[in-house]
Every structure is written in structure tokens, then in C-alpha cells.
Length: 305
Image (cartoon, rainbow, N blue to C red; front, side, top):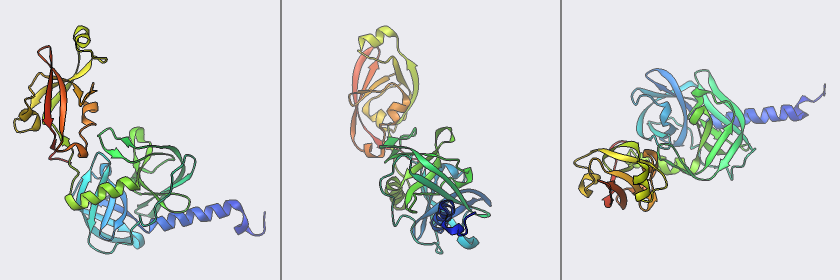
């Protein structure tokens, strides 16, 4: 056994990882809802904490557990389920911003450490970046600046915690994605969404004011209208005060196109109703009583997050 254990590469790595967790942990908090620890979050600025929207099952009786077992009360400032970001307002007693120094280019294979906080102190998981892709859209239609998927086992209680690189710089927020695979919501997305939530309380999304149901068109009808995909979506209800009603969309209309692009599913249509779409005019291609029609609708803003 070597005489100087501090000189061994393994011990040096162990010490560095412990320092990473401790350094990031100063800005990480545990979140209690109705007295139960449900998630983690991290300091966004002096009076706000960012966490995972999906991890918060209730919006009342929130309290934070920070370093040194210090507790403070918090209230929900706003949430955006499409990007899984929620912001809590906190009255005093928070450490400095965790986003002061941001990680550089995220690369496949680089080390990642996810840090959360439980009732017994810090929670840490180590892994590597398994996927580092470009901008993507969540299943709920949220625009996320970068796809970062981690190869690690993330403690569910650490969801909403901070992910840092080997230099301790934040990559973003740890969340559990589809099939419980750990993902990172990148800092760029957090800054954009959290800033707006603090100002406005929500992220309005595009709204048409229709109820939809997926259908499969008759082959002859699809051929008549030059549709490559027989899947379509039928309007089954129309909000009388909504944008679709004002544009003349009717129950029974079959939507097959949006601004010149085919839409064969409700998800495909919903993905186009982004926050940026609010207020602009869109051309819907519909099949009505067997005939093609174009309906121009001015997209409204949703009243719910």
C-alpha cells in the first residue's frame, strides 16, 4: 500500500468529487410540500429557487431545507409544465446564485454530478453525458435549448437538483424524463423560462379553442386530397369564445394541415402552439363535407400553464 494515500489517483478523484458535491450543495435545497420532502431545487437568484414542475404535486405549504438544516418558507411564483420548470419565491436567507458560472460546451462522455438535498443532507449521483444533442421539443410542446441525457441512477428525491460538470459549473437541472431516464434541463432554458415566470407567473401557450379526436381517413378521401398520411384530427367541440370559433372552424371539420405542413396527430398540432405562436395568424387546412377548405385563425393564449 502506498505510504502517501493522498497521492493516489483514486483518492484524488474521490476528494475532487466530494468537493464538487459540497460546492454545488451550498446552492441546493430540499423542498417540502405539506411537511413531506418531495423534491429538490437550487437558487436562481437571491429571492428565487428553481425546481422541477412535475415534482411539485401541491402549490401550498412549501418550505425549503438548505445547508445547515436552515428552513424557510416559499410560495409558487409560476410553473411551466412543458419545460418542467417551476419557480418559488423565498423570503430571505438564501445563498448566492448557482448560475453565476455556467458550464461550457456539453460533450458526450464527460463527467456529470447531480446534487440534491434530503432530510439527512446532500444527495449525489455520478455518471456521464450519454447524449448531447441540439434543441428539442418536449412531448408537451416545450422548447428546450439542448438535449442532454445522462447515464446515471438518479434518486427520485433529487429531481429538481443541480447537475454540474467536472469543474463544478452548472449544466442545468436534473429531471426524470420518459421511462425515468435522467435528463438535464439546460441553464439557457432555465434562464429564459424562469425569468419570464418571475415576471408574469406563467408561460402562455398558443390556444385554438377546440376539442380534438384522432381519426383515420378513408383511403379514397386521403388520395383525393393528396394526403400522404391517412391519420388526421377531427374537431369535436369548439369554444364559442375562442379563436377557432371566431375564424369559422366547425365541429366535424378534419384538420390535416397547419401553415402548409401536414399535421396527422394532436401532438403534431399542439407542438406548433408554442409561446411564440400567440397572436399570429395561422392557416389551417381542413376537410369539410369532403371538400378542402382553408381557415385562417389568429392564435390566442391559453389560460392555464
